[in-house]
Figure 1 (tube, rainbow, N blue to C red):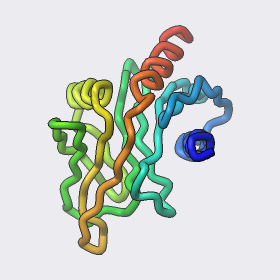
Figure 2: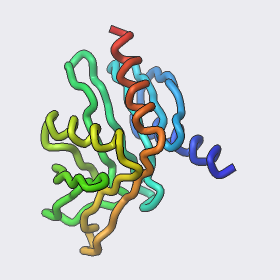
Figure 3: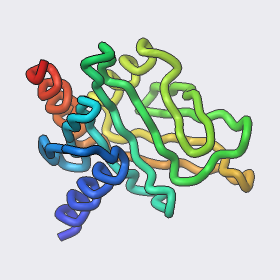
Figure 4: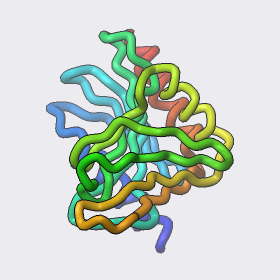
Length: 163
């Protein structure tokens, strides 16, 4: 029951995170799901954290935008608004990546860092995104990575076939 509820929550989260006119569910893979939107055309893998759930609807998404030539772009929506000026770090195993952030959202600095994060995600079991909340307290949103590689591949291949 818990697994099915998590899958449903992930699917609902995907619908909330990227509003669009037309969307296809590509699949649900453990704790990650993959979707395709048509306007504008893009595909993404998405998950919600196992910790840090609040009214902010936190998520981690990796999106491919074929028309822009963008592949595997990371977007994190934090569970809380961050403290202004506080650094944000994403950790996967031994790898630690500083992110660019504003408000409650964070991204990789560039495509090279996106690629390094995605490579780490493929071999990791969990990832965490850490910063300080607007109230000054530290917090971390933690994600399971089971199913992430499959969801990433499904999203990327679906967008590649559509061109």
